[in-house]
Image (cartoon, rainbow, N blue to C red; front, top):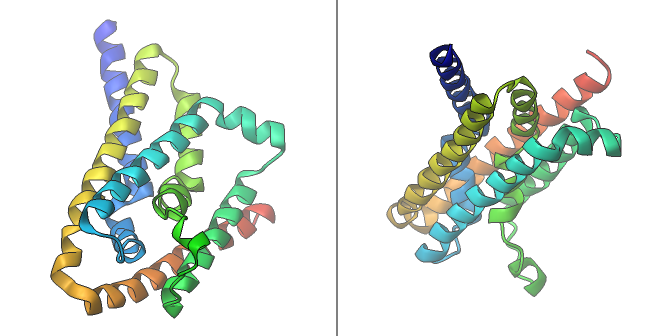
Length: 206
């Protein structure tokens, strides 16, 4: 009986890892991350890679524990959360596409590893809702442990992916980074529009 529970918990953990990895998509977030940190020194880029992964982990864990209660208490629908995340990403995408460089002191104090990388790009509505669903389906202690392990493993993979991606910046030089920023802006805009469209569909049950 214990072996059956162990296999069930292991399978559950693997499913959670694969699902969250696909939704959070670290390789897909890499060009956007590189475009956001292109002006930072090498050590700072590596630090920001792990900061982004850590912020995402904190957000996901917080929603895993309190998410259902928080959304119900504030009367926030998943669609509203998705729409808000899409609008935020769209603003960042427009900055990348237009090449606007924020040089004010106030802008310099903003850590892009926190927003938009940590959330809503990595820990976005899709990942949050998926985590809440997995928490509700975790019926045993072993399944909850497997889910927690999967969440930590996903974020270790995110941190490593982003950290090693910083080596690319020194290879492609400034012109390559500029091109990468435009491509990243286009991809991010597409992600943002998709989030907004899905939110609208959810609101009107389309």
